[in-house]
Length: 433
Image (tube, rainbow, N blue to C red):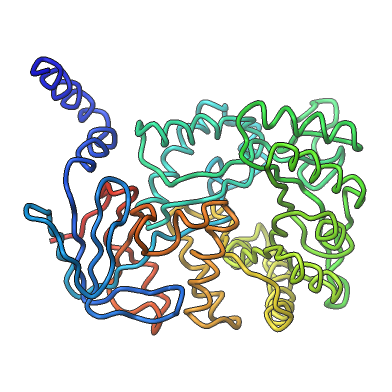
C-alpha cells in the first residue's frame, strides 16, 4: 500500500509537468473546501444572499447558506467582496472556429491544427467562467470534438463540460455548403451532406457512432432582407425534421436547429426539436408552439454585433446591423410571447473567452439581469440535459462555481470579469493577489 501511494505521488508529479487537472481532481476528493464571499446568488429566486458560503466535498456541493458548518481541517477560500454564483453556461459555441473567414479555415487548416486550437479555446472559455458549453458543430472537422470532450472528461486538458454535435448536417447547396468557389476544386462543405429522410437518418446514426451527444441541423439559409423583412429559405421539410427527431429520440437524444425565420423555424418547432438557435424572426404560430413545447430560443446576439462591426465592406456592416435591428425587434416579441430563452453567444468567429457580452445584450434588449441569468444557468442546464446537476448552488449539484466583483443583479457586466473559477471541486482560476 505504501508503495502504491508512492507511485501515485510520482505519477502526479510527472503529470503536473503537463497538466494540473488530473492530480487536482484526485486532491479535491481528499478534503472539504469552503468558499466564502460577501454575497451569494440565489439564481432560482433572483436574489442575493449576504454573506454567502458554499461547502464542497469532492466534486459536489454539500451545503450552501449565509454560513455553513464545516468540519475541522476544512480548507477555507475567502473571496472577500465578491459574489458567488453557478458556473456560466454557453449553449451555442464553436470550439473549432476563430476570427477570420470560416470557409477558409476548413480549406487552409488541417483537422489536427484545428483540434489543437479547439483545446486552447476550451481553456479560454473555462477561464472566463463558462464551466459548461454546447458545441454546435465542428465546421468541417468531423468528430474531432469527441476527442476534445473526452480529454476534458479524463482530466487531461482543462475545459468546460461539453455537449457536442460533431459535424453539423446540411443539404447539398445549403447554408454551409462551399458556394462561390471553382466547382472543379470540389471544396468540402463545413457540414455533412444529407439529402432526404434516408440520408438524414444514416448521417445521424453515423454522428452518434462517432460520439455526438445531440444532432445539429442547418434548417434555414442563406438570409436576406427586403424592406426590413427577413427571408430565409428552409432546407428540410417538416416530415424530414420529424424523422430526424424520432431517430435521435430512439437513443434518448435530441436535435437542435440553426433557424432564423419561418417557415423553417415553424417546421422545426412542430417536429419537436430541443432548440431553435438564432431565431431572428419567428411567426406567432412558431412562438406559440415553442412556448407550448418548451422549445428554447438561443438568440446569439453577440455574433451579430461582431459581424456588424467586422464586415468585409461597409455594405456588409450595414446589412449585418439591419439584421441585428430586426433581431432586437423580434426578440422583444418573443419575450412577450413567453418563448423560453437560453443563453448562447455563437463564440468562435469572435474571440473565445469574451462571450459574456451576450448577457449585456440580452439585458439591453429586454430582459432583467435576473431573467438573463436564469436563462443562462437554469434553462442552459435543461438544454444541455444536466438539469439537477449544474446551474445552481445547491447541495448535491456539481461544484461548478465562479466569483465576480460587484452584484450581477445590479450590473450584469460584472460577468465579463470572472475572477475565480471552480469546476467539479477543482480550482482552475484563482484571484490575483
